[in-house]
Image (spheres, rainbow, N blue to C red):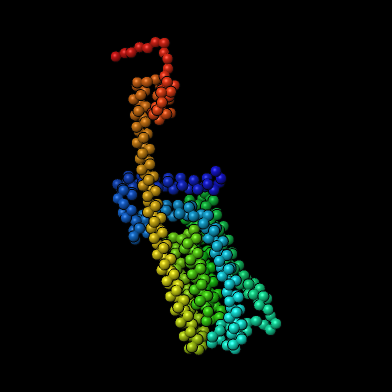
Length: 354
């Protein structure tokens, strides 16, 4: 068994210990944890546990269970955003070439003649990649490294008892932090004002989608808060950008583009939020079911221990201690005659007293 498996086993034992302590506390206080159904221990259609103490236990177990998914989610986030950016440069280059060939200006195209005289598309692409790395992806990589390092430290440290703090740091550092920063960069580009809502929509859908499904910290509360922050920031930056457009026609075009993009974002958010809601409800039900099973196992062990003690006391009053100890090793179950003969002892003299 390697170190990671030992750590997972230790996390399971800690979780079982915490739930057992909660059950004993509920029993002593007159409660009946898990015995009256799941609904009596949850609120808001099963989304949240009724007590803060149990919610913290659930979050701790959730963080331990998805510890490795955090690193996978960060790697996929970096790869997907890089691939998306590599796709946008050739598309923008072809669009600008079409605009130049048809002598179209900013009324229909975002920018015209972005290539300098004698400049090749390859050199332009390399310059743009260097710029994007300097102002955007360096920040994303830095935040991702911080999130991964904090996640590793929290799960390795014995001082941090509740591992759910790792999910909170991960949520705030790479995902929320970079999303707000990327939206500011997108809306701060005056040359490509027409495609700003579309670019912002792509970033929001990609990042929120990755966080919801493979981040390892996709709690319903985090997903809902992430979506709210994305909508508020996009709307606020759109209002600010509208102030810099002089022509009413440009404002109408930008307003229509923003409305279309926001509609698509809200549809995606609704689907993702519904999926996140039902997934967390199922996780909470499985968590409560695990508590009930642990409670039942403890009850069976207590009953079996009591029965074993009673059986041993009764047999000690009838049989020699050596035979009783041998029966206890066999769990008081003799299945073959050979086992019975192996326990028998020959005595030279026997006295039966009444």
